Image (cartoon, rainbow, N blue to C red; front, side, top):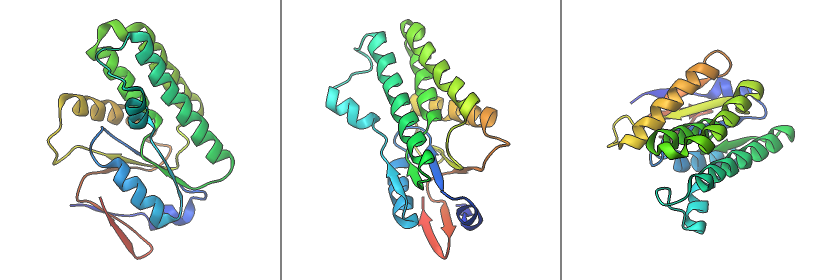
Length: 193
């Protein structure tokens, strides 16, 4: 178990804009809700799960163009929400990031080669945004699968996000790698990951 003191980051960054990225099923949503509540910040809902349920969307059965459009819609959702909140100086905690979108696009390209044409374009759209305008956040929590029974998709997503964070964020903003059981401390409060 590791502990991270976020007090200095939280005091120095205003508005505080946190993204939690990582593979599905590790606990990002639970942690984001806890952090947002403790920090009195807005919680940015990751809409992917809700859209999949609403549309009864099956990644394996859908035509490549729909998968690409789905990922593109997720990208534009985050781009709008993060941009809007940043422009209006709002503090927030998000349970996904543009890195998640890019990683899942790449997963679709590798897992389902016919998707390469459309999905690759969305992947590059996301990366060009990150390279040109950044990821919006002033703190990124990279939630790993360490200690969990991860499947091949989760491991791929985690490795891809790790590489993208190293490539685009290493020298520009704090990125903390966290795992289940770690503690985040600030202002006398402790949140268990």
